[in-house]
Image 1: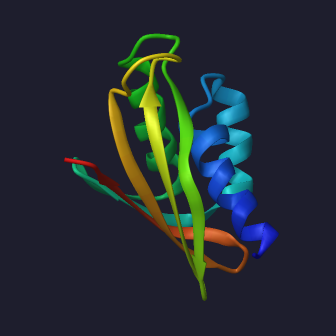
Image 2: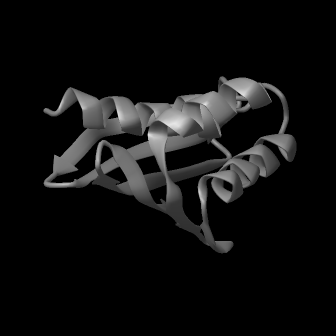
Length: 119
């Protein structure tokens, strides 16, 4: 397992999408994504680190303060690609959402991130 890729995927989940402190989120995003990262989910695609951070901020601003992301299975890795399943919701009980993030890694950072939700 490539530990750098594992660190990127976990930073994406916990330090960016799960981080409620705006400065800490911005700092983590700078370490995790390329400037021109493309992020796509069911709401459409956005380009650029600032747009991705805005999407994460909007998500966290729309849910209760105790909602958090947790990893939901192993981290999968291939050449330049990784995937990590997750749950999002309150600390106990059923999650509000489940999904998987699929990332393309370029030059040691995530350059494309696709989020798929469990239906």
